[in-house]
Length: 435
Image 1 (cartoon, helix red, strand yellow):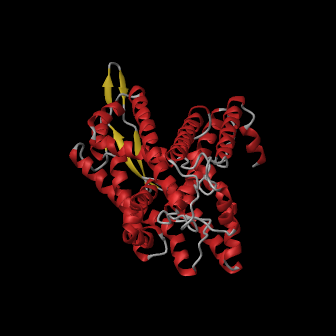
Image 2 (cartoon, rainbow, N blue to C red):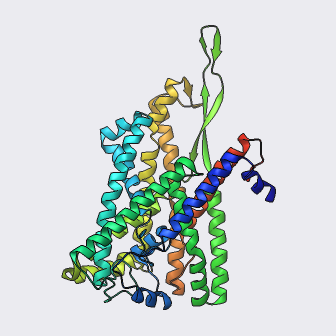
Image 3 (cartoon, rainbow, N blue to C red):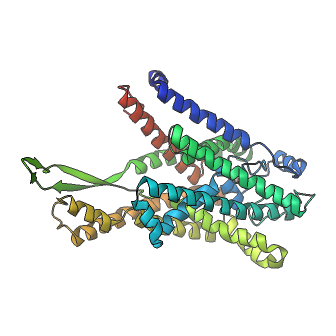
């Protein structure tokens, strides 16, 4: 293991990429602790010292922001607006022909899509910053600010103060987006995923300590075993795939004969990754954001949303959350993999699936296989996501360091990053971690 770690730093270019990624992560973590102006931090310190934790929408966002929300830092929103904008652009690519045309233009079209994703990220950051600024000022608990009820955390409230805080958070989001793109271009791995990984991992020690203080020792051991079992399950399912064999016919071009070889199409069991969990959580967060914007004029609506769409211990929340994850698993898989396009590519390259005729029969076969393997993949995501919620409901524990979303992200990003490092090491004739 130590020799493999040394291999990572023997190649100068790979060493520079790793060190650059670590530097960007350090800058990101510093920004998660730099406070914004005009906020009453004595009240926030009181809440933190009393072990009051955030849940609901804020709990999810704080997970991705690495504690920047509980610190009311300049990176308050973290990478979440960028994630949401990227997902929205992928979904719009199905219904807007111009986006589909850009996607087919290669690198030039991808630059246009990236630029519009940035614009959408800034727009979402402005909307979310406005909602959270009013929530902190009004002491609104509908978003999951546990313990903030009735507390005005922005006492010197005015239009100028509100605009300053909103612009600071929006600029912080733009800076996080730039840092993520720097990692993608000059570092190791996907920048957005690496920053989320750093945020999630940074919260694990504090959550583990809070769990140790809140629950019994037996509960702590059981939850550790549950976390290990979930990690093993995630690695097993993330590596699982259905291989569709493809045979290419022989053809003569000039004096040479091409084709005749066999290959396969790898269809992952969890084709959509962690996207359905994030999207389902965002859908559940949307009513809470609207209720917080309505203020005291919709007290009944806020109470219903707070008890059914924010508190994760309720059976309505767990059931609705599970159905949303399954729905978005099928929805996102249908967008990510197009059976008609794949069947057309196979036919144009002179290939066929053994026992299946080219054209529409191949398309129907691929769609049938995809639907079959998506079901266990979606159920797996739902089980991983709701396991912590069931522990909340049964043991009345508010701290669970091995949340489904956090484990899916950390394990998935770790596997993908190690694969990239392995490929870099194999290019230089070094033995990799996964070999």
